[in-house]
Image (cartoon, rainbow, N blue to C red; front, side):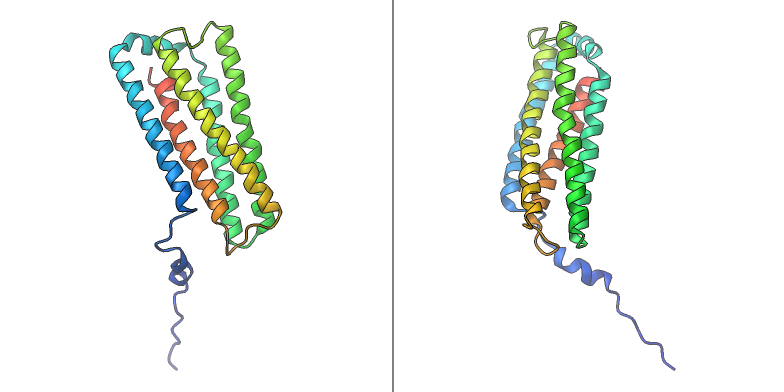
Length: 201
């Protein structure tokens, strides 16, 4: 009795995703512009650090590492939850996808709250944008990042509203995926900012 060969179905499942750009091209244009903007800002950081090494060494010691760590955990966790939202929708689990997206939104909202608390802590300790070159660069980069994160949070609200209205399905989820791509990009930028100001001092 000859054995019947069972075809490997895994490649067949992956076939529709081969060669496909996650999200949409418009979002990737926006992400590219975001990366380009922060590339220029990072260049400013390195130029300023090269000219004022002592200011950067001393300035980092005055920042709250707890606040920086909290923001990092919030960004990474929210990115994970949004990735779970995409994965569960792909699997056809719409309600679970909505739940993960709500969780991602709640955690993401912790970022501006944590940033506000950090700024109040800074001001209470005499740290503002005029406290030296280190703090000027610090505020410029971190507040720019907060602006991009705020756009991302507004994007989460928009996508959540569409998701609740049935705008996405296991076959059509490019809008949710585009949001995830933007939020992951914003997360990556913070993961670069964090060591620049809170660790490498």
